[in-house]
Amino acid sequence: MTAPDHRPLAAGMVRAIALACRSAPSAMACYLALTLLTAAFPVAIAWLTKLTLDTVVTAASVSAVAGLVAGLAAAGLANAAVPYATQYLRGEIDRKVGLAAQDELFTALDRTVGVSRLEDPAYLDRLRLAQQSASSPGRMVDCVLGFVRGLLTLAGFVGSLLVINAMITVIVLAAGVPALTMSVRLSRLRAAMLLSISPTERREFFYADLLTSVNAAREVRLFGLGGFLRGRMLADRVAANDARRRLDRREQSVQAALATLSAAVSGAGLAWTVFAAVQGQLTVGDVSMFVAAVMGVQGAVDSVVDAIAGGHQQLMMFGHYAAVVDDGPDLPTSARRRAGTPLRHGIELRDVWFRYSDGHPWVLRGVNLFLPAGTTLALVGHNGSGKSTIVKLICRFYDPTKGAVLWDGVDIRDMDPADLRERIGAVFQDFMAYDFSAADNVALGDLTALGDRDRIERAAATAGVHETLRGLPLGYDTLLTRLFFSGSGDDDAQTGVVLSGGQWQRVALARAFLRRSRDLMILDEPSAGLDAEAEHDIHTRLRMIRSGRTSLLISHRLGAVRDADLIVMLDGGAVLERGTHDELIAAGGTYARMFRLQAQGYGETAARRPEGFPR
Image (cartoon, rainbow, N blue to C red; front, side, top):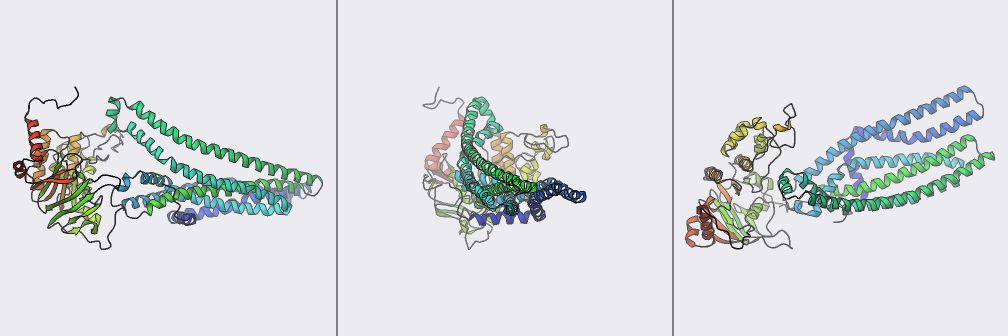
C-alpha cells in the first residue's frame, strides 16, 4: 500500500480546516485574531527598540524616551502573555476537532457492511494511521496559522530590512529557499517512513497484547513463552527505531547545514552593518534594527518552512483518515434495496460458491440448501467443511462469490443489511465476553432492553444463568471484568468478577434469547465447552426456544442435532448427505459412522489410544 496521493493536497487542507471550523468556531476565531497579533509583535518591538536607542543617543527629552520605553514594555508584556492564551486555544481546538474527527471516523467504520476489511492487513495499517491522524485537522490549523503568522512577520521584517539595505534583504531571503525545499522533502520521507513501519509496529502491539492479555496469560506462563514473545516484540521495536533513527540522522545533518548557512548570512550582514555604522552611514538604532530584522527574517522563514513541512506531513497523514472516511461500501449496495419482511417461506442457498479471495481455495462449492420457515436445519461436518461460512453468508458478513442467498425468494443483497440483521438472533462459536456489567452483557443482544431489568432477567433465566448473575457481589450491576473499577464508590477492583467459560456461554445465550422473537435463530456450537450435564440442560432449553421457530443449528455433538427437522452433512464445502436423523442412520453413510463413533465414545469405560497417538 502506498501513501494516499489520489486527492489533491489543497483539497485535503480545505477539508481539514473546514472540519476544524465546524468543530470549534469560537476557538478558531480567537486563535486567528491572536495569530495576527503575534505576527505584529516582533516587528513592533524591533521598531520601538530602534526608536528608543536613537532617541537616547540624540539626547531627546525624558518624556519622549519614557513614552517609547512604556510602549516597548507594553509590547513585550503582551508578546509574553499571548502565547499562553494561544496554547490554551490550540489545546481546545485539538480536543474539539479530535472528538469530531473520531466520531466521523468510527461512524464511517460503522457503515461497513461486512467484515472482510478487518481481515485485510493493508486496511488495518491504514486504519491505525487514520486513528493516529484523527487530530490532524487541529494540527493542520496550527500549521496554516503558523504559516500566516510567519508570512506576516516576514513581510514586516523584510520591509524593515529594505529600509536599511536591499541587497542584504535578498541574500537573507535566498538563504531560506534551501530550508524550504529540504523541509518539504523530509516531511514526505517521514510520512513514507511511518507508513513503511506500520506493519512492524502492528506486530509489536500484537506481541505486547499477548504479554498483557489475561486470555493468553495461562499458556504464556505455563509454556514459558514470555521471553520468546518479548524477544519478538523488542525485535520489531528495534526495527522501527532503526527506521526512525535513520531519518532523524538525515534530518539532523540537513538542519546542521542549514543552520551553518543561516549563521554565515547573519555574520556577514552584521559585519557590514557595524562597518557602516562606524563610517556614520547607519545609526545605533539602525544597527539594532538590522540585527533584529535579520534574526526576525530568519526566524520567520524558519517558521514558514516548519509550517509548510509540518502541514505537508499532516496532509499526508490526513490522507489516510480521509481515505477511510470516504471508503465506499465494502459490499455492493443495491439501488433497488427492499425492506425486509417477516420470514414466511424460508431461506435458500442457491448454488453458492465462496472463497475469501482469488488466491484462496474454495470454502463452499455449489451448495444448495433450503430452510423452511418454522423448522430447524442442522449443519454438521468436520472442521473446515464450511458450516460457519454459511452462517456468515446468511448474516451477510460476506457475499457469495457465485450463487445467491435468498430470504423468501429475495436476494439478501437487495435487502437493507441492518433490516436483515434485525430479523436474526445468534450465538456464535467465538462469542464475545464484554468488559461490561452483567446486565449490559445480556442487554447487548437487543439494545432496546438496556435499563429493562425484567427483560434482562427473563432472558438470563431462560439461559439458566439468572441465579449466577443475581448472586454476584453487586448482582446484575457487577462488572464482569477486572480491567475497570466498578464505580461502586470505593473503587475496589475486586468487585469485578471473571466468569467461567460455561457461565459466559450462558450469558451469550441469554443475549440471543433477548431476540427470541426474531425470524431466524442461529446457534453455532451453542454448548461448546460445557460439561455433559450443562450441555444437556442447554439443549433442552434450546429445544423449547426453537419449537415452531426457524432455526439454524451447528454442532459437532451429533446427539444435540438428532431432533432437527433436517440434518445436512457438509464435507469439503459441499453437501454430502441430507435427511432426518433416522434417515441418515438408516443410510449408513458418513453421518451414521460419526454418530456411532461419538456414541461409542460416550459408552466406553476405558478409552483406547488412537493409532499413531504419541506415548
